[in-house]
Amino acid sequence: MAVLLLNASLQPLNVISHRRLIVLLSKERVAFLDEAAELAAAQALACRRLPEGVVIVRLLRTIHVPRRLLRPNRRNLLLRDDHTCQYCGHVGSAAELTVDHVLPVSRGGAADKWENVVIACKRCNWRKANHAPEEVGLHLRRKPGPLTQEYAHIIFLRYPELKEAYDKLLATAA
Ligand SMILES: [Zn+2]
Image (cartoon, rainbow, N blue to C red; front, side, top):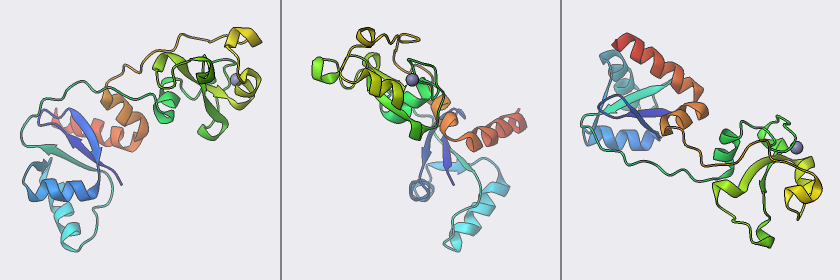
């Protein structure tokens, strides 16, 4: 189960491993948000078990977070393009979808620029092959650009159970 790390201001920062959690706890850099959660985690860790369910901790001191530059990797592209083929609109599972270079790399297209990579279904990717889209009658449904959402938004898309726990936390804190 994931551990959500919050800034002292309660802004979500990242998802961390249990190992990292233990290090941060031992250095007294983080705290649990309520006593019940702290007690449950302490008991679990004392028995060399991992706490069950979602764990949320916050840093004791606020850190300044520079704007993150997300990489256009497969996972982020699936999020940006909503698991939707950018040519025909087919919505599929990750296994059904591929990453397509709009202008093929073999023809000078950038391999790792947000503007040149889109999610495509296997059928469209096969049809496109080593062509530019317009050469084979394919058209992008929207202009590809960088994923601009807040990093917290990305975390919550990947871990819906964390969003639920975080929302609940904010509701009780208010
Ligand atoms: Zn398609």
